[in-house]
Image 1 (cartoon, rainbow, N blue to C red):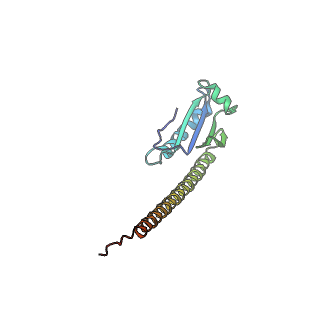
Image 2: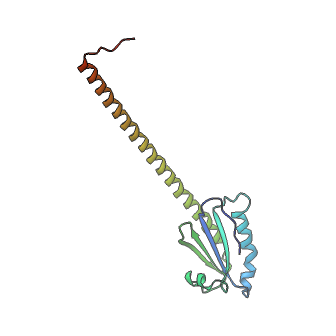
Image 3: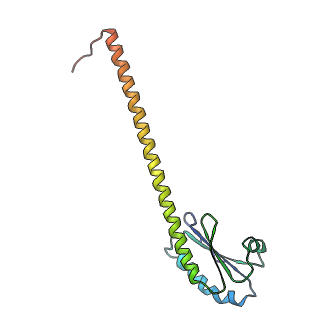
Length: 156
């Protein structure tokens, strides 16, 4: 199993379904290891996770993802949607799918952060308006009390 811990949320999950008896799986394993190192190791950002699963050890997962041919590589978005699948040696598409999905996820996160900032800003404005309105009411009430009592404010 190839797996690197992530520091934050996972933007991309790469599932590599293999079997110990599969010669082609053994052939692409070094390339997948290099790709995992590229995206997960040494400053890769921690938002991509690679998992190698032997279909004999986890047949339920293979069945869940409809794996019929080995090796099968699936690229999933952080939300769990399969955004790309590949069988055999077609690894170029895997790298492109990772990059595309990572960029889309970061774009979505940026939009969410901007929306959160805008919501917070609106809340602060509303709080300020509410406090300002309270202060005006208190000021008016004090002014009325002073006027009704005939007390003259001291001037300084």
